[in-house]
Length: 133
Image 1 (tube, rainbow, N blue to C red):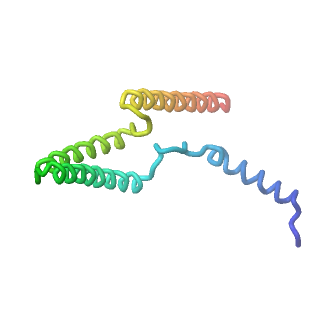
Image 2 (cartoon, helix red, strand yellow):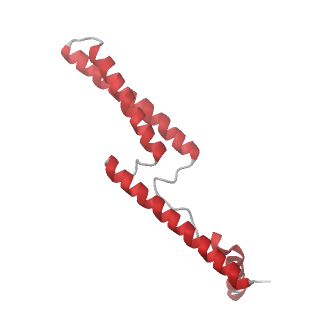
Image 3 (cartoon, rainbow, N blue to C red):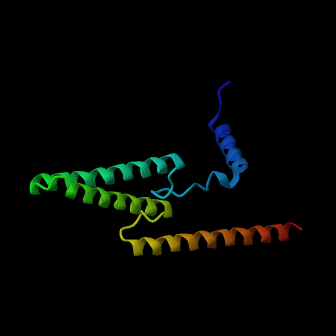
């Protein structure tokens, strides 16, 4: 027995109504929506890379200036400090924009928008429950 396109369309419509809003509401996409594993790997990689780059810059300056461990140690600590700053930005969710002030303003705007949407959803839910009674 062959299925007709009308049957498939009806089935699709029934599935969409059964699923409700979960099908239409998707998570926001972008850099801010990483999984825990992805964010953990990113933090680890950024720490290692920042320390390695700092040590590498210090090593090349030491070879050029013939001051054996001095600049390597200084830039190693600077790389570590840069890594810590990057980790704090990632943990706070401020790594999406250029500049700390701009990132703070954008994060506050996103948080306010999310709170407004939650309030609207609660308001709509109470109106629906009041209308059903």
